[in-house]
Figure 1 (cartoon, rainbow, N blue to C red):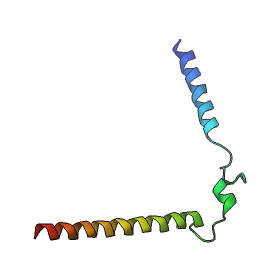
Figure 2: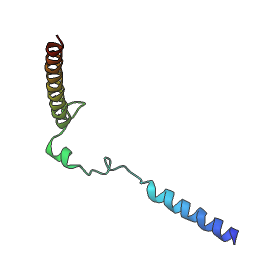
Figure 3: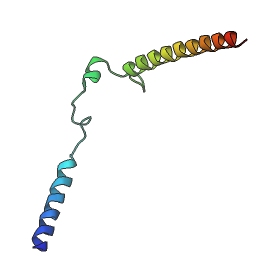
Figure 4: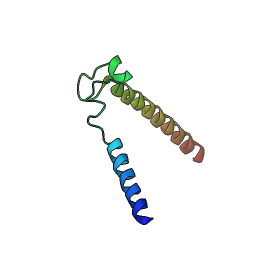
Length: 79
């Protein structure tokens, strides 16, 4: 009973490992994502990532300004 069970588990694990390991990654197979089709990266960082970074910097600046305004109002009300 155990020999059949262990043999079955061994075969199942071999099948699972071989199914998970592909011969090539998706980047190597020539398939491109939607982002790659729209814009090719000009440098190290793709353009869509640079746009997202600029947008995040804008949000950060807005949050800092809002925080500064809030702190000034708190200082005025405490005096």
